[in-house]
Length: 464
Image: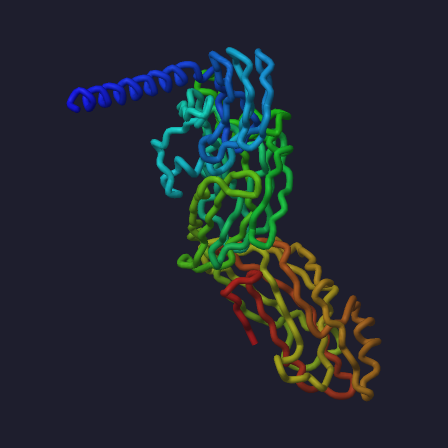
């Protein structure tokens, strides 16, 4: 019995040794050949597997995110007998070439920010004559990497004046490229408005369309306009946004330069002037990487205008029929910054109180700025005129009198944007001819109102 037990143990050991030798021999007979590097969300790459004897080879599993694209060729007349899983009838020693591609899951498998393991080893699992064999990849799996950064900005922009901010989105993935459209999005603080966006080119810019979420798509056909970080044109017509080649010292990352036309909507230095720009990449309707994010905040110009007004009439306060009363309005900028786009408004009735005597009107065709040298700068009041002047039945002669005095256009109200910028410390004089008809009665000749302020400004100033 003891000899029988020893013999059985020896038989088991012999069988185990034979199986180990047989499996080792099979592994040695299946090996990697040439394997092309793979770009995630890129094109198709070819891989070779070398088999030293006849048999049935099955690709059981590829690395995460990889897809078998098809049999390319073989040097022994391999027959593909099944596509899922890919199965090959190998007549003898052979080099088999097949093609693969990789999607977002290949990136996510190694991205720690999305639960992946950066040290995860990619391998291909085969079976050859029903024996499992796993071979680690000897090729690289390269991924794009987008970087969003500032290229140009305006230091301390003025409120309510458009300015341009330029950011660039660079493809910094080595030996990688993007061949799908990319999306660039922006979110804005409560006091910043976006007026438009454009893609910079070597010789100009191309308008980009913003959707309701303030996102824009840059198509692959626009990648030809890519510049490097030195703003030299490096794009071509390959429809690829390429990274640098570590083996080529002249190779640089390609970047897309995006112009944002912005406007600060407040004069308050504590307002929310923030902007966030994001961009990401992906394929097949999936986003591979978490967004690349860039945040910036504008500092409103310290030079804030502050407008004050005074009024003076060259004539007495009574009714006159011999000339127009020349109302002079003095607007002074007592702030520290220039006041552009100044709106001036004047009406001959108080707000909410109808001037029912109808004996006062302005000659809005003759409003002008009186310059310091005595010259005049006409003010176009046409866009904001309200011509509703009427004459009471007792004074129909007023129309004739207005014309006789050289009047151009009667109006009870007007509003206009002044054609000049009022610099800090500067005072301008606006002359508004007023017609007071006193043919048979004269009442309430001076019930009018005026106002001035920067467009959309929180600092208008009124004078009654």
